[in-house]
Image (cartoon, rainbow, N blue to C red; front, top):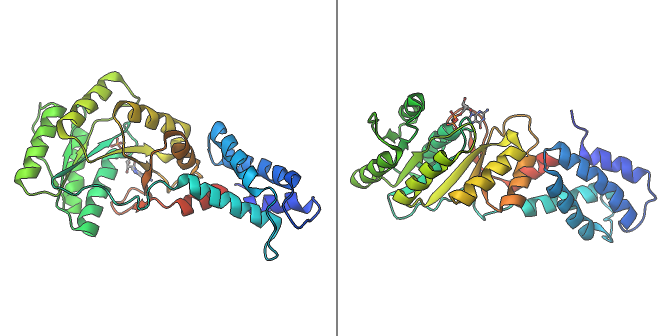
Length: 297
Ligand code: GDP
């Protein structure tokens, strides 16, 4: 569907006279192509613009190495600059969950993949780090969501807090905290209710839960295919709740991953994990290098 950026740039440079160093004109022409590639990858316009400006200063005047073509060289400069912006934490998968029982708050809109990701992350913590994990659903509006988490728990061998009909989210959170302490759990994960869009009642509810448990990590789960919307959602959740990281789901889809760049550039929050499918083991630590490669096509 997309033309490979390296090929496109080779085309640009073929039309220009070959020189020993990247001239301002060459770089400008190449970066026009880079900008188009970024926009096609669903990077927002202001972020693409700012990024290209940064790369332009870096690339102009660079000597062209003999072993590569000018096109390849610009791609490398762009790739490295992408990784630079995308890199958030030294080890994005290392959650701050010492001092048990450590609460992890999972937030996001409905349908973004929150419940699925809660299960995936619980499984990962259990299998890879040997943690004893308790999961609790706070979605009192959708009994099916509560059942969904219980089913996932059974499937992956992780305990879920027994469902008590009629309880408010804050009370469920308190019960989870107590149960986690009594049961000797290392981590307890709270799967909060989502809405189709952000509303005040939802935010207030999540704030109240946050204040009750003081989460060690607050992870926002967003659909990576929704691009700009995902970035806006992240900004709002961060302003109201304060998030410690982002999980981008549906990165197994055909999206080009541009949301990741906009997310980092606009919110400054680290992307911790990416969801790569519906299965419980389809969760990976975020790797800037891989996303950069995908954005460039
Ligand atoms: P929630 O409403 O935010 O809790 O969303 P769910 O966890 O129920 O997920 C909604 C749908 O998206 C389900 O059908 C999931 O299987 C699916 N889903 C979640 N994460 C991913 C992912 O990384 N890739 C794909 N392809 N599907 C996902």
